[in-house]
Image (cartoon, rainbow, N blue to C red; front, side):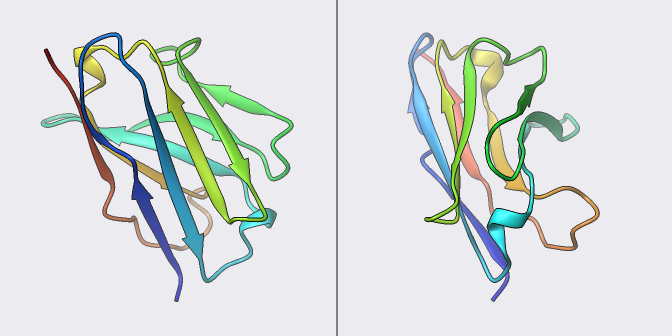
Length: 116
């Protein structure tokens, strides 16, 4: 079964940290770059970070650069997003997904809420 399962979200205070995980199954995970996205209420989905197949190159949006780190473990078919110095504007549902050319449905996402 081809699927993506995100986890690790929750409620955190401003300045706090969370580590998100995305477990992939049903496809050759190590052959694909992976992306993290988020979607806040009333806003379009935003691409946050990309990691290439072997993890030796990563890119970040300006909104998270220097605070978030994407990583992957191909042996576990899992991609991670370490989020530090969280801000209220980081509140959103977070998703992982391969590039758009790879046909796969979005996962259910994981909710991150940053609030005091």
